[in-house]
Length: 386
Image (tube, rainbow, N blue to C red):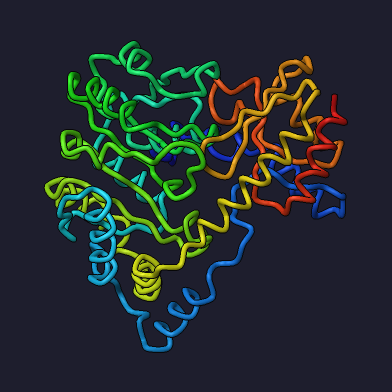
């Protein structure tokens, strides 16, 4: 008898940890006591607001530790619906909301609800490192849509149109974008939406960096009434409220999709923990804005990195949003992978751009989530790699 695993394990082999090899090597060196500055992951460097931690703690003390409602706790889904009602100018029914333990779970389960073997998912390249796994887990095929550094990695209708196949079903859109920081304007999204309408495509829109826009204005296909019926939004508190460990995410979609996707969600989980749901509700109702503090910090750090690289072969791409910066290292004679591995020997851990798709192979990605003095020191060490 030969025991076998499901084909999903083969489809996802080498799509996860392999992309983070440099990060894991950096962690080993840190554990061994090396003086290394880690710029690989986007974990906010301000604490989760104490008031939100107290909400969660008090909720646990009050006994909110039982099973959750499958769709999400009523107070939380109402607060999420209110957020999107205010943003879109339309009335969003709480039943259009599903809760998940973070954006990653929301993406995965929504993708499972949208696609299967025989479908193609259009994924603008560069893309976040886990997206290919999200697509392939469902059995769908991953179709990269090459974007160009020359226009700031903004997806264009022509680029999308050129990648569409007869099996295309979903565009996985991320704006503001990780790793590039590109932020699509409402007219850009409208033009992309026209292509999606013409080819009857869903838009799965990852909007976790919504509150961290520095240049331009945030825009979403869900906010366009013409596109809302083909759009599923996913987001969370991880970035907006410096709370990645709480795993507090959601989706907002057409009601009929939410009804169908709930059964998929419940095959894996039942909402999120009630005490975390209470924290999400409190966060969305509060006037406090942790993202404003983070955004001010990141803007200052962007300028610091630019100053350090000025006059060197390292060419930073100034992000329009988010907590990362791409740096073109091609003038060094190395690609991003070789540069990142060499940078480890100079005391800095950065992500190779190739971890985010073929279009970013000439780049490295820096996280802006360390104190400014540390970031300056890291930038000077990176110049020393040359």
